[in-house]
Image (cartoon, rainbow, N blue to C red; front, side, top):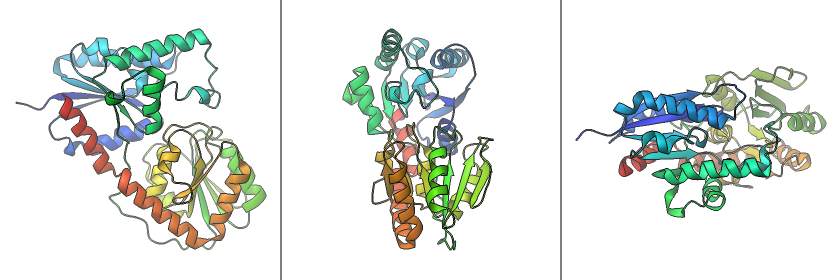
Length: 347
């Protein structure tokens, strides 16, 4: 019997692009299933993106129904019409964070708060799509808790299967920078805490370290001890190069679910200084592979970065711990194989 044809319908926004590219790179390990890759590009519009995205996903699936046996959808944004689209074919819905996971982050994402009626309507729509799914895949325990507690999904229907990071190249050689380099990666500079980082660097670390900013925000310009590189696309070779040259990674983000930048920093054996947002506390172990601070706590963030700038041995120890954690929990070869097997076993 031939392997089931599984449509991978995947949203093309932010870190979701990285996830899509990473999974495609591991397609040779998709034993037992025949993947059909269907990326859904983000588009601007007046309607709520979940409705627009779900319609785009529906149209794409309609064109391919005759050759699809099952469907994997990432993210929940594309899934509102999935159960009705595929009828009796199994649908697996994957998420880095649900809409209700992110309800306290809406302002940081530049969104207006939903009123009670709109929030209830959205919750019912999502709940219906989740209950029609053959299985739900959460990137973290934080996301699984939302599926269960916010949407009433049964524990046994939600599997925690995190994405992965490419570790095939091995860790970079030991750093020899005379002045430690602190790397920040964030296309959306304000949401990712870039302004807070800039301010505390100017006040506390200028002259003792170099701040390296990789962002697409044009207003951010280089100055003394501050380098600015323009962010172009996920998985860019420039990100890997800057990570290999850096000594520490800082992401004082105000709103995030599961930032790939943290994983990529850990893979590069960099200590990570970030915030207690989304699934970051599951990725970064405070005091072991880095430090975590509360949102907008510039003093705690500055203390953590200052400790790393002053202590090379601490940087090396935390970086090695982060690399080991990435290898243990987020090796792309292992995580992709686990996802493919999870789908195959339920088709």
